[in-house]
Every structure is written in structure tokens, then in C-alpha cells.
Amino acid sequence: MRTVEEHQRIVAGLIKARDPQCVPIADALGLVLASDVVAPLSLPGFDNSAMDGYAVVAEDIAGATADTPVLLPVAEDIPAGRTDALTLKAGTAHRIMTGAPVPAGATAVIPVEATDGATDTVTIRAAARPGQHIRRAGEDVTAGTTVLHAGQMVTPAALGLAAALGLSELTVIPPQRVMVMSTGTELVKPGTPLQPGQIYESNAVMLSAAVRDAGAQVISSPMSHDDVDNFRAVLAEHARDIDLIITTGGVSAGAYEVVKDALAKQVDFVKVAMQPGMPQGSGVVGTTPIITLPGNPVSALVSFEVFVRAPLRAAMGHPEPERPKLTATLTEPLTSPAGKRQFRRGVLTGDTVTSYGPPASHHLRWLASANCLLEIGEDVTEVPAGTSVQVWDLS
Image (cartoon, rainbow, N blue to C red; front, side, top):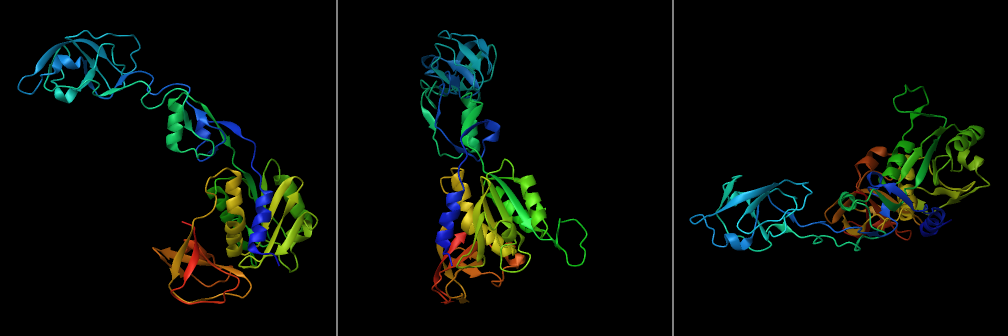
């Protein structure tokens, strides 16, 4: 029987990063940079006003107060976007808007709130220090500076910076393209009337959401009957231009184990010393890696969390691919099967954790309400209340 760590290493070795791609900045959010971003220009690109007000020579209004205001003629009006070069003469003012270029000769901007707001002769009721309310060229970014680094996730702020620098594309590690395939003749799509013996397909819905939550793309999520020919036909139809195949169901020891029957030569089907999720499989179909997960819902999602999520994120360059793991105090006693790593659904509250629901691998209700997994070692069969246990934070 394979250990959890052994199977983790094998799965991680199958999932490979794609070659870097240049993508439009609008498509880069949440992806990881494959190369540094060097500023092609400075920000700001020119001295500009930080306030709506008046560009002045600071010395001209040095003595201005509310009781002894200074009056200056307004020689120009400078809205944001004005492109002609202007020069301010001493003893005058230019009305200026936020973001507008500061005219040559001006040494300060006095906010409109400190004036009467006039457009011909302005009354100024406060002094200004040299440089006040002027954003200097290059004070944010100097051309040639590395502003974003390879391995950094593209955030909304990073996109704003790239756009401000005039960049229309970024070089990123592209997302993994994943096919999620469920198996079972009894499965029908949600929203379809059920016939006797049928159930709604939920595993592919759940695993597709988990794949997207990990940052990857779901290219397709087909269903197959418990028939080898049908399974192979569906697989061949959908397994194109993808980086990873995930199947659920058909890998145990019973009859009608279609995945096992169809892929016996390509996939290594094993038992892993864990509960839930003992039957697992991994291999390559053509040139595409495939991970075969159990069919019980809890087993399927726990297996994805334990074996697939972290290497999937690592292949996309995420700096912290694994779920946060922490220690919490157990609020109630638990038992665990000898020789198996157990993962129990739980609710983490502060520094305490409570097991949530029975360990049965088909109970979706409890899984949907859990925010963590409790991990109990293979050599532990009883865990008293008050014990510190390792918890995978799923929130």
C-alpha cells in the first residue's frame, strides 16, 4: 500500500508547467508573472498638480493669511490633459486642475479651498511652502526600474501599474487546462428529471469548481457510462489541448470499474493508506497526465485537496501552492483506523476545531459546511479531546 507522501510525489511529478505566454493585461489577473517587468518610462511622466487650485511662486504668497490675503492675476487656465508648454511669471497665478502639468516657474500649488476660486484675480488666504502639492516627475517610478518581479501574482494593483506604464501585455505562466470527467451509468445532469436508480452528477461540478478555485481552467467536464467503449470515446473526444485529465469513479475493486478497465495499461492503480480516498490512480494517456480519483463525493474532494491542488497551483507558479496548515485544539474525542492517514471534515473556530459529521465518504452535507480538514496520523487510533491536531485551512 502506498503512503500519502509517496502518492503526492508521484502526482506532483506528472503535472508540468506550460511555457510562458504574453497575454493582454485584461487576461492576466490572478496569473503569475514569468518575467520581471521593467518600467519603460517614469511615473509621473511630468511634474503635475496634486490638487485643484493655483500654480504660484511660493515666495509671492509667503505672507498670505486669512486677514492679510494676497491677490494675484490669473494668467492661464490649465486643465488635465493640456499639452502645450507654459511658463508662470512671478506675480501671477495659473488656475490648475489635479493631474495637470505644472508650468515652468511655478514652485507650489495652493489648494482652491485656500482661495476665493476666482478666474481673473484670485484672493489667496494661505502661504505655501516650495514644492507643496506638486507631484514630481519620477517620484513614483523611475524609468528602467524593475517594478514587478517574476513569480509575483498579478493583482488589480499590478494591472493598474502596468497600464499606467503603457504596457498592453504581460508575460505570465498560463493556467493549466483541465478536463474533469465523471463516470457512472446512473448519472444525469442536474435539472434533468430522475428515473428510478439514477442520481444527479455532482462530482464533476464539485471538482470543476475546485479546479477553478485553484486558479486553473476547466476546458470540459463530460460524463461517461460504465462502458469501456463509451468511456474511451468520451475521453478521446474531450482530451484535446489540455494539460491534465481528472476522472472520478470507476477505480475501486468492484465490477463495472470502467476507468480501471479502460486504462489498465496507461494508469497505475493503487491503494493509498488514507481514509477517505484509498483507491487512487495516476499515469499518462497519450502525452497528457491523468489523475483518477474515487467516486464517493467526500473521497473525491479530499483526494483532490491532498494530491492535486498543490501541484496544480505549483505548475502555475503560485508562490504558496499549499493550503495553510495550522495546529488547533480538538473539542471532542475521535477515533481513527490503524494504519491509515485520516482526513476528517471539521469546523475551525479560532484555535479550536470540531469534527463535523461522520467519517462516511458519501455525506456531502457535512462536507459543504466544513471549513477545514483534520489530519490524523496512521499510527493514531484514538484522539482525546484537548489534543492538538494538524488542520488544513480550506477557507
